[in-house]
Length: 145
Image (tube, rainbow, N blue to C red; front, top):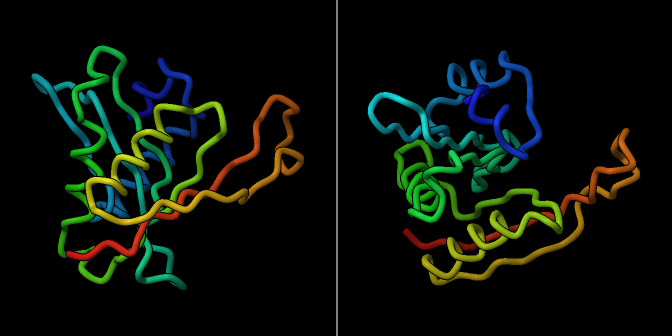
């Protein structure tokens, strides 16, 4: 995962973060492989104070695999797991310029016949770099299972 992110425009976290997510949040993370190579991943978790929410931290798909629906299938796979049986909402933050993620989450809402509310969550002045955009909260749901 870390290597895939290092070759993309995603915010790269430490290698430790990806290892920790897979170790402690394995029920809400997934990887997609092709010929033994990771070509996509989703890291997510259920916030302790919001047991009906799946928060998607990061979605990554190798540039050679984009447009094949891998990200959408990975999201649905996690959402359908037993660990998410009480989850009715999916939340994520997305920058205004990240049209691919916006499309992914709006498509997830459409596929699950529910709404997608978008609002500002983190203003750009919270980030140390002047180049970092605001983060918009995408809240999808309720999703009926």
